[in-house]
Image 1 (cartoon, rainbow, N blue to C red):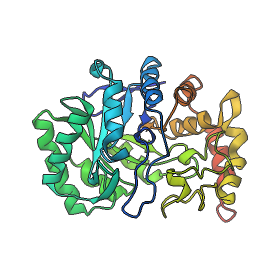
Image 2: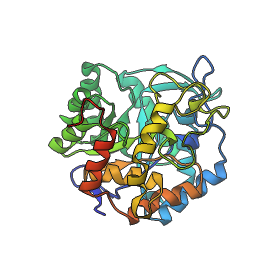
Image 3: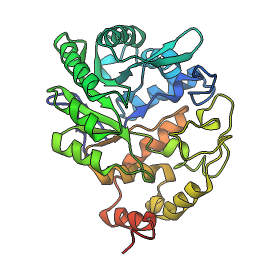
Amino acid sequence: MKTRTLGHGGPEIGPLGFGCWAVGGEWQDRDGNPLGWGKVDDEESVAAIRRALELGVNFFDTADTYGAGHSERILGRAIAGRRDEVVIATKWGNTFDEATRTATGPVTTPEHARRALTASLRRLGTDHIDLYQFHVGEASLAEGAELRDLCEEFVAEGLIRAYAWSTDDPARAAVFAQGPHCAAVQHQCNVLDDAPEMLDLCARHGLLSVNRGPLAMGLLTDKTGAGSRGAEGDIRAVPPSWLRWFGEGGGALPEWVARVDAVRSVLTSDGRTLAQGALAWLWARSELTVPIPGFRSVAQVEENAGARDFGPLSAAQLQEIAGLLAAPDDAS
């Protein structure tokens, strides 16, 4: 499969990255609701990251707020002594109390951005970030423009190589895209939640499409399916409004299970697992996509990395899935 280039003349990455939200472990919002994916084994997390490197996956996406700093620390520990082999993406814009592992809300000022960058560099054990991403998806266009220009200053200072906005709004992504060193957009995209406008924007501006939620928070995996995900400390057990695939207690909602079942046979064709098929769908949508599935174990890393052996779905399979998921009113 084709590699991707991060920005003009930037580092090459493969078609797959790994998201480090889950390895941050447990953390919470001000009301005590979980924001992580439950308990984790830090030794397994480190082993999984190193296994990904062995398998040729060099792009890792995290955020300062994941685990209230813990995810960055774990990633930094795992890649210690191997920094030149790794392309690091992290995010800023949300504050937190590291001692209590509690999120304390967004702050969009330039002053906070510089403080956050300094702290992320320290936790990751590096002198630069390859892709620095604004993590407040609904910030105003004016705030975005100001922070885009600040990111250009960070590039000039050698602190970052490129930047992006993590947002699902093409208009906001377009503001960052005006910057010379904007290299990507991070946005939600998966079989159940396509993003044609954002993919078109990436194609027009030559940006990578970094796909969060490529496995629909586990719904597009054989492990989750219709089963309950109500473990203590798991965000899916008390799903926020944006997490529409799961109900209270963590069970996948029947209507979404039915949609997964409708396309299961296509996604698992040619010997793929369900997760591998979901990744293959993203690669078929655009050669600019870089899905970043989460992981908590070596086995998950190996399964997702194995999707590359099959490559993208065919155009015919992509069309078949679109037909299976089309609403009755959309069918023709």
